[in-house]
Length: 264
Image 1 (spheres, helix red, strand yellow):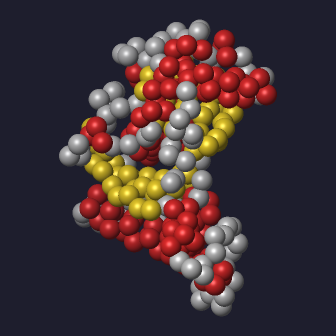
Image 2 (tube, rainbow, N blue to C red):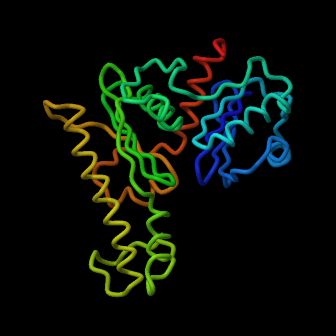
């Protein structure tokens, strides 16, 4: 089995593959001070709950935007996954991606952004945009070569809601899983719902149009793949989200492990 881990600022998403099939995936909070021993306690309990034998794990790969947690995860893999056939793999810009990385400072690109770009290209094989709804909302662009050519970063929906609640005297902290009755909010809560959902939907459409014109200067649609926890919530308010793949990052990690397991 292959254990894949995507460490984000807010959540860690992990999954277990067997013979190319995803057996299960889990989304847990990221705690930046977790040690390898604490990860072992946490995940071995998870494996037991799902009747997965850690001794059957033969491969491990991690993509992390939290350096301290990347170190802990690699230590965890080396110390507690004792039947690995290959050394643990971590995602970085110099590994075999099968695409170029044409940005000013490749080492600064978030590992998850590279993983998503690789997974999306594997599906579409055409210039594309990946929209990831995480702590931040990121747009990642792949051209026809293929090469990862950068993108944009925006405050995420959760961050924006927290800022409204913490930086204003009368605006409440709330959940926005309610569909607005109409765009013009007739109460404070309804106005926040509408502002977030229609507002972020408009952000998605505008950025896809702007980035798409740069990716394909002679015109034509640029396909998009959305992923992340809020993608399903925003899709009804954005014309330019073509599809949602909640497992995109896990698929990309499995691809990159296959390409790099013999070159660690």
